[in-house]
Length: 425
Ligand code: AMP
Image: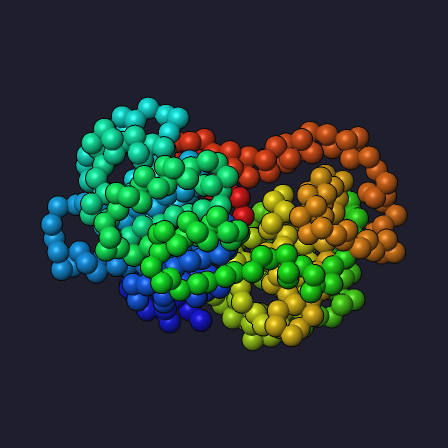
């Protein structure tokens, strides 16, 4: 399935393509048609599934099409509430990205900062408002915001909202919304309290559940190779030659790294290509098509570029570098072992990556089996105490991953936040 199959209008389609998305994620495939029909939605899904685009795209499309008919003053037509300022900023960034050819304006409001910039943006007029509950109520009370024109309402991360004690604020917001509206409710978990709350917001919703990715991890045959950084490419060549897989997807943490790996593979006589954000769209597409058609056995990708890869019988995934966000590991290995196929995921771990490995094993609740009899095992990464090997890198990588888990700077719509968000995956 493509975004075009979902009947998305051209200006949004173009923006989505410019983001580098080639295929909708499962939640997008399921939710977009429901939302374009104007129905309410109860979504059981986590951040990281592509949830934001699944609601931002239909909302933008509705507003855009309405605007062709009614050219009145700008009023707030869509309200998205979310528990934290980082999430609010990310969501607003998404609306900006997907809506960049639509002329639809959004702004983001959250507490803990002065309100001047936020009220100025509101005064200038917006169509979409992304907010945390406290600041939203505050600005409503001060008369900067009215909710009477809201047609689309999204409650995001409802379970976190309740955990953070926002229930009363949410009820106050709901009381001010017009009766006639389309409502969306997202939560990663659905305990009784959440189901009750959803009942107060939604009218006869359609339900979409995206299963946690952990389920995938169990289906995939995983193995771990301790190897020094300089020997990684030699081990890669050795494994590609040994496994003789029909299609192998190699993950590199950086674009530069991906290019380097491809160069070395080609030199070793292995046909390979890289896909990442620095490659032109058509070069990426060409490599991807060759990979899908079986003309290219090895594709080297960064995480962002790999999200659109949808190859049914992908037999082997190799994590040349371990990701520094544990969830990404599950996304990566979930690329193999789809449908009936059983997949294999091999991961390299150098001394610096041991902390990342620990996080991954915590998340998937299992130890990745170690293969110790490989030609480059003698270099002894497994035994080496990591602090002695590379204390500086160890620390900085780790603090990076902490930051990526949600410590944005809090500046509205700044480039820095955008980067944080992208890195988070
Ligand atoms: P979310 O779950 O909304 O936080 O999205 C997770 C990440 O996936 C974000 O970095 C998005 O930019 C990215 N993303 C969303 N949809 C797609 C898609 N169809 N293809 C590739 N990346 C996507």
